[in-house]
Image (cartoon, one colour):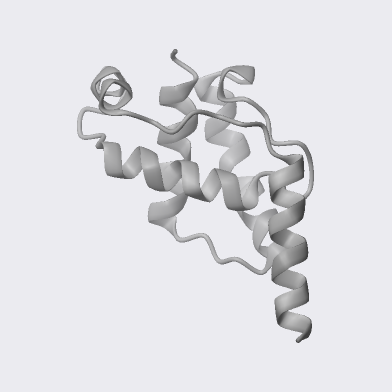
Length: 109
């Protein structure tokens, strides 16, 4: 029962505390090849899922345009470690990479 309460509370907090960012589309993936030659829509979509689930758990999730690519390269690894401590979610290296790609590509709009 506690598990369900925690999950519903977490989902509510994420829904209330996140910045609504549009789901990536193929045009975003195409634009993203300027930065990441092999980026795919699936990677960007997974990056958004990681963003939606984790980035609003401790603070208001920042918009992708709010930071430069260099800043995101430093912020994302640190925040992935903090998100694991806060939410218990393990973010894999692949998910972290997809999150970074999502933030950088969506920040290019």
